[in-house]
Structure formats: structure tokens, C-alpha cells
Length: 309
Ligand SMILES: O=C(O)CCC(=O)C(=O)O
Ligand SMILES: [Fe+2]
Figure 1: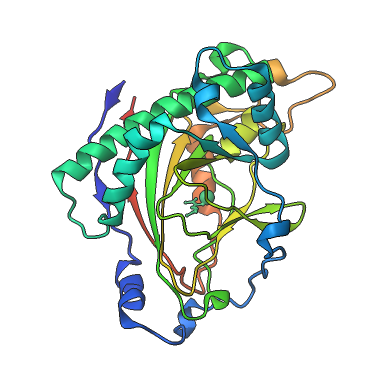
Figure 2 (figure 1 turned 90 degrees about the horizontal axis):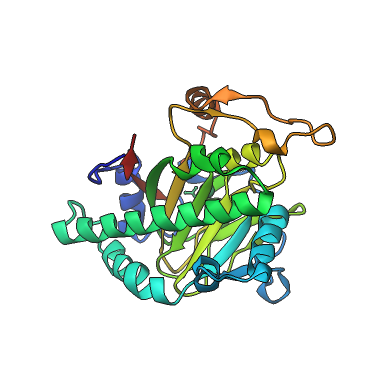
């Protein structure tokens, strides 16, 4: 296994979003307007059910308790999302990257920022591997069945959502589920915008300081034979504040095949997904049509791989 240097490509949307962010517009240019957006069904924060919160220090320590494991299992089954709070990691990884991400959109990046992003990327590879191992334990899978995901690829997306004079007219990121095994989302400047769909309702996720938001992606939904949920989510924008986030996607190894784990397939629980190669799984994603009619009110910069085989 070899670790590649982090390299960044700029998205084609850059000029448009920079134009929006800089101009102090009072209305949104028509090409950004999404007419068919679901309004937020729950917008009153005080009555929203909230995604479960799990303590990473307890979960990742060697002597974690069964109750933390059960909490993780329940979060993955019922929500497909949870927040991972952490105290020790936050000062080591999160704080440093937070400062530098706020400077990040002034590319080219400085060498020191690249170094701390590499440390962040490696730190998250370890966190993801640990979470996937605990998930495998919770699902009672054979150890080797998680290898496709736990030794897979990593990519990151740096997202910038500028303030918008008419936030209800636009969408930062349209409803989607992630193709990853798990995604580790880091809301850099604690501005709310992420909403998840639960029981037909859009629920805003309230950012907790120095927490990671973890969600189950389609690859883990398939491996768990549908036991764990890959939940639809979207990002709305704010009239006053810009929003920054980093999404780290942990994805299956390219040279494998993906299917429900054989140890989870029984007469009572037959496979609900067919086996396909990871290459075909990825090809399928690219053929999913995104709404090409209107622009997204965001800028995404993506990096290639932390790891390669
Ligand atoms: O920016 C966010 O909060 C979410 C980003 C996201 O869902 C994604 O990049 O897939
Ligand atoms: Fe996503």
C-alpha cells in the first residue's frame, strides 16, 4: 500500500461562485434558481429530532463499552448518520485543519497547509478503519468481509457555500446519497446547512463544535444487505454566512467486487443486491443524471486519493 501526495483540482464552477460571492448581489441570477426544491419540512430547531451523538474517545479506546457499540449499531440502522464528538483528536487534527481550510480557497496552497491536510487525511484513514471494524463486529460479519471497504480508497471534497440573498431559491448540494462506505464530514465554521431526510422529513443537522458527522454510504448499505441505511441528504445555504465543509469519502478498493457479505445472507435474509465489480459500481454512479438545468450554489474542490493499491 502506497500513500500518494495530496493533489487538488479546481472545480469548473469556480468562476461562477466566486462571481456570486464577490458581487454583493441582491437577487440570484436565474440559472441558479431551483424551482422544484422541497421546502424544509422541519425548520423549528427546538422540536427537531437530532442525529445520535457518539463519543469517539470511548468508541475508539480499547475498552469501549457495549452500550457505545449498541448506540453505534442503532444509529447506523435507524439514522444512517451520527455525530462523533471527540476531545483529544479535535485539538490535534480538527483545529489545525479548520484554520487552514478557512484560508484554503486562496489556492495555490502553501506547503505547510498540504502537510497538515496529509496528517488529517491519514488520521481519518485510521478513524474510518476503526469505525468500519466496529461496524463489522456489530453486524457479526467475518473479519475478511470488511477488507474491501476498510482497506479502500479515500478522497476529499472541500465545499464552499457562499452567502445567498435568496437562500430558498437555490440549493448548495441537491438531495443525494453518498457512494462511499462511510463519509466523514467536518463542518469547518459551524454554520448549519446540512439536512437529512428521515421519515419523509428534512431534518437540519446542528453542527457540534469539533465533531465529525459520519454517514453510511451506498457501499456499506450493500455490504450490510440493507441492514444499515444510506440516507438522502442535501445542503441549503444561508443568507448571511458562508459555509465551509470537508467531506472525506472512504470508498471500496477498485479491484474488488461488491455484494452483501456472504455471512449475512441466509434463507431468512436473502441477498437484496447483486454482486458487481467495483469498477461497474462506479460506472453506474457516473450514469446517474444530475439536474443539469440549474447551477449549484457552491464550489467544490476535490482531491485525489490519500491511498492507492
Ligand atoms: O457540505 C456538507 O455538509 C455535505 C457535503 C456532502 O454531502 C457531500 O459532499 O457529499
Ligand atoms: Fe453527501
